[in-house]
Length: 255
Image (cartoon, rainbow, N blue to C red):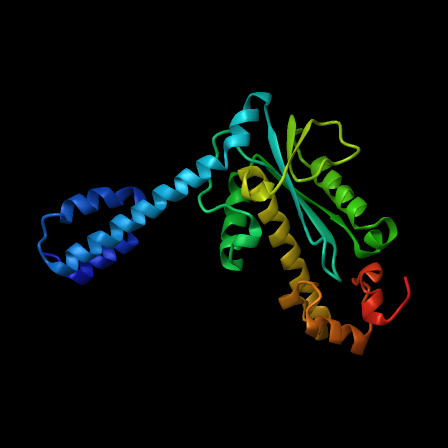
């Protein structure tokens, strides 16, 4: 007979699809410790089932428009920071793609985003990013720069999508039909995937900037206006990656 510790390790290592068979195998084991482990395994299965249902709900738009062909999710990150580019993601997932735990990137831990980023790139039909630099943001404003980054991401896709699902916006200057969805990164698996690709790409870039300009704390603040970041701008002055149009007040300048 296996020890309780051995059964615990077996259940812990088992892929979720093998858990029902293992639970059935040990169901007749009367030891309290084993029964407790089985309860934990069943709760794990219940959580998995809830997650599968959540993902199915996030596929509603993909199901609605699937007959059109390739569906591309579009989202951006970095509209609000004082420094760094705005980055747009464009992701086309396979028709019946179900990536568990995918969500609005802001709802995920950094570790989970990184894991999902790799899975998205592995499974996607196509995934690209577009950028608008701080200088470009200053030149044409953040909204127009965001649209520009989105157009760039779409233009780099190796296959042309038949429809775009966008997080809340309609992108001007694109001849592909678009569906703007409010809070789309929490409602569409394609938009959520684009959100994660854009977020991970931008965060990695800000960590690289941090190595060159460590006094601004870009690795932790990602360019956003934390108190420490504001104080660093006031002490050291702005860098080439700061958005001058965003930091007038910090520098005491008139617009």
